[in-house]
Image 1: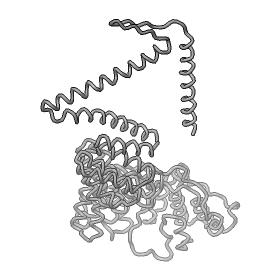
Image 2: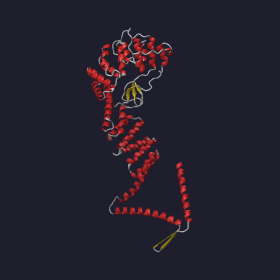
Image 3: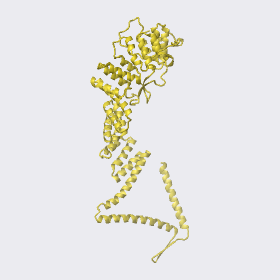
Length: 506
């Protein structure tokens, strides 16, 4: 509306200026006298201005006529395309002008104008690989999916624009949520342009989301060959995909293939905890405990983790708690000062009824890093040493609001997962989970008010927090699958205070 009003005002201003100029020229004295071949013409100022304008128009028409005459002479002398080229030049000039306007309108967000100019350019140029693309993008921006899809399908007919058409259809299907069709289109687009980085990323995301691990490994290899992925990153991510492929094979009861895939994944990335645990179990199934021990020791050296300790315990499932404590020395001696090692030793000591040893293993963890697991272990130690029930319950009360400690946390969205997965369930990120302590993991339990009286036996305000032992300990319990202890023995340390309460240990 404002632009139309501005154009109308500009028109009236131009008319007024021309009228004013004509009035001035008509009032100006003098004139121009032209004498040629016995002819003499005298022109006033206004007449001279009009004559100059007519002369410019006449020269332009003369040049156009000269071009037409030259084209006609060439046609008469045998050049059959001379006339068509003459008229095509004019049409192309107008067509490219319309195409330029369409591109400008599309970039400015004027989608309807862009579609109209593209249609005009198509009539003049007959180049659908240019104009149809603008039409498709303008229709997609306007929300006209049917017109956009028809335009992208038209692009499939030309080899030069086939990739653009496939890619456009893929984007439409992604917007519609049709991931299966989008994956097939992405595969076709990647076949047309194997080095196209955007298509590689989209296809990889769709394949991992659809759990097509074998196809994802092929796409990852294409990224490596195209130079879009460093070799060390490729090796790590390929190991992740190989691990998931092994899990699928294991679910299908293809044990031999699963064991081989798990071992291959561990060799590709020894620090990948789930791959190391699965590879160790594969060696255990092959009755090769030495290889399983070697795999777990190497992974423990990179990152101590409870899953590694659990797999290490499965090497000799029938051993006694004391024998297990001695055998685990070969694992815990690798990184004795690591918190996970200290927690593991404390839990193993509790299982072996060596409560002073468990206290020594924890060392200063109850004061330096009091997680729910550390405080629960302290409750088990106090219980095992015959401490008063109020002391035991005090440790459990503190565990209710203590941080959980390291967990599987997504490095992109910081979502917490109960188990490792190749793809984050929250943000869809691939290989973003890491074993770390989430930020701000402390806070009141939603059931704190109800649970504290049950655990402590009196109002929470009256509970005196126990002084931590001067020699606390550390470790993650990998409880051996031994027969249940006699009723008169203290219970083994559970993982959470809720589990203790559920079992009725106190």
